[in-house]
Image (cartoon, rainbow, N blue to C red; front, side, top):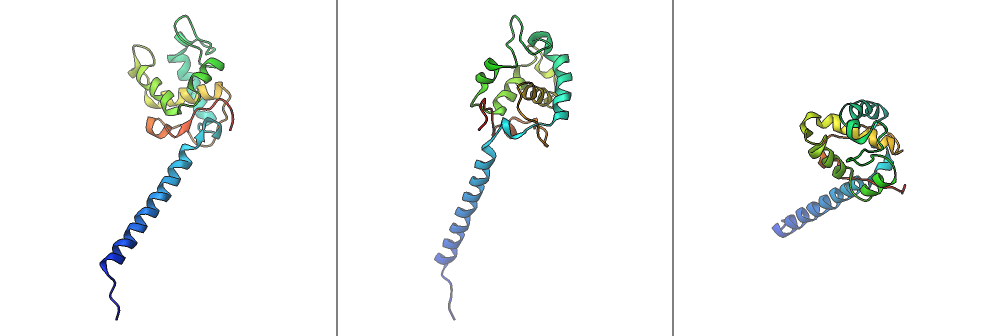
Length: 149
């Protein structure tokens, strides 16, 4: 009769933990590889966002998203290049904590996610089958890229 040593059991456990970490890391890398080109919002969400944008953002950023005296454009080259390489989570967090200026708590997280979906649609990023999340951490793995990969 052969008895396993505690070293063999501990070694097998360490291998299992190492494999779990590798597979978890692979899943995280796959999520981080997502970009705005992967359809990260729905058309319905963008439509809701268009309404919320007109109610809460258009006064400063313009009804056509072209910007105003003190507010930048939300469409086109300057806007997209400003966020290029950052995460959608970075953009959402900026909206969450500072917009509308002076009254950021007047617009809910969900409304801000819908507005962000509208901005993505207005900048011609494709829609998909899943709504954009309303939590910064969940959006951190989505890269804002100007050029389609």
